[in-house]
Length: 292
Image 1 (spheres, one colour):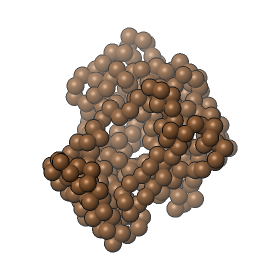
Image 2 (image 1 turned 90 degrees about the vertical axis):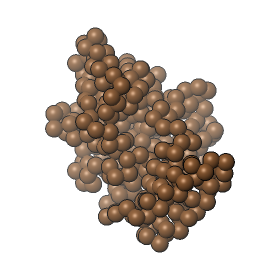
Image 3 (image 1 turned 30 degrees about the vertical axis):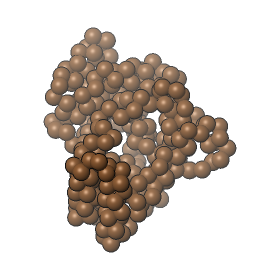
């Protein structure tokens, strides 16, 4: 069974729009799981009302008992699908996206050729249809930063260049049950940011790869869950970056990157000392967190 998972947090209208586009254009999806990540704002009820009013037998709304971030919410849905739906193929889709054609079949066909990989789509801006990223991005670990691959380029240019990302965006990420059986689920200790990157790097250690499927394209409205200049953003983004570095490059590397990332945050937010402090706290908290 082929399952799409859409994580909702206080954005029921956008989530419904995303799900309806998948229902309309992706016939090989057998079921859509909408996971409300403990929104506590009426979102779960609105989503259930939508399913009931439309009599959607191939859509299930799950209410997570707590907000455990991107990884926790999607893991909750994956576990449920494995237990109740005999799911074999999963497609994680951001709720602030939509499709206007069948973007799932190319992903499925690629996984049928090799089920030991993650596959991702081209992500285009919903506003002006320009390329936001060619599947994912490039990592600069010591800086604690990543750069979207192909942003502003044309899809045709990127296809011709054939440059591959270091990781695939969780905005559109497909994989098989076999991958889960081999490496497990996402690390929920990140809470936000780097979860899917960590997952893919963990998979690489066992020979599981990644692949961009340029014939699969989603349109993206932009982040709905966090602001790009909030204390929340700086704390969790920096914490995730240094924790990731500690796991894959060692404690000393993570410690050095925490200083560099703190300096970068200070330069960017020089007029906002509270934001600087949140970023610094996050960077060094990541260094102290346990990793395996």
